[in-house]
Image 1 (cartoon, rainbow, N blue to C red):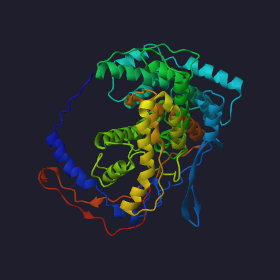
Image 2: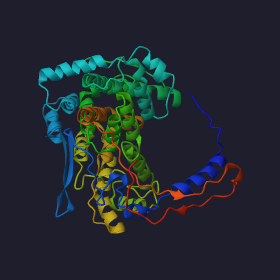
Image 3: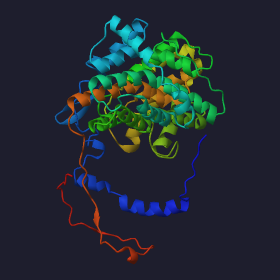
Image 4: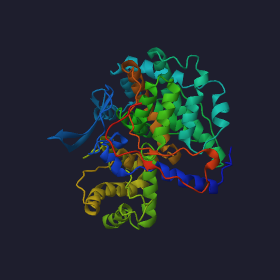
Length: 476
């Protein structure tokens, strides 16, 4: 393992942070006074309309008489309800992720012949550049697979003969190659982490050309390369449900922001990966897993509604869990009555339970969290806001049922979401032309410039606010 010891002492950091905190704090009241939509959110929690897209619609409420009204959630890929895609895959006992990749990129459903050709193309594109595994992945192991994915995507740049060519044919080629290669990079990065951080065996398996993405992943992460068709189909459905979620989600917006600056594909996609790692985004499934383990540790019967309700109450009161007051896996920025991804994954988990009966109690615990949390929030906070389970509540359980390690929970989200990022990048290039550049209101404080030799180390100059508050904005 590589390590770096910072020359900056903790004492120095503490002193520096005191000044930093004092000079960077902004009162919450200021956001309301200046009518600034913090987080690009409206007061009702909905997102500020910042763009147009033909790729995806996330539908969880409607506006009546100027107020947001809850309704059952829908996730629409290119005009097609994702539930229909999953239902057809289940009905015909087939894989569907590659079809979704095609749908997101090209905006139409492929014929069987087209789909077969596309799967063959993806298979041919899975091979990484010569010595890439040894020189990029193995030589610099990472404690977090997400950071390794971002690093590896950036490292593909010098292997590309036309990395900065943002013409649509070239970006499409890059996109297809990344969709094909990211599952391989993820699997190898995990193996390298096993060896260097867990001191366990590392195994590198050759990819079978006939395998679909879900099969490629399960074969690559298991020591004996064995998996069942049922396991692969269940993972495939997870990938379908995570493939896209509209232009406003944080990682897709990050990808579009970088794309609007006319940067290269590798830089734009690595930004999406960095965003998805965050605990408020793709990393939320890990926070759910941590919360579940904490509940198991402190509740004697995780299937008893009373005991679970008592502990959730403590979590909301910041007396238990990570003391954040958050019940992870509950609530969403758009969905109100239901998150269709959570609904489907819960049903898939129930159907798969005979294959993994040891998770019966944990599934019941998640159902109790889903059932009890809204009433507890209403009782403690006096809020009538409608909240539902989101996809993160059940995705981690499904991964555990498939014997997928926690290290790969969020990286799997990356594998699934990459087609959506690529589709949005292409759409931004085709219909863009303006760099995404929102405005910030400056709240700086006026200070007198003190010559260097007159400054005193122990004096923090407190500046006077620059005149009365004004609602006028300065755009630079």
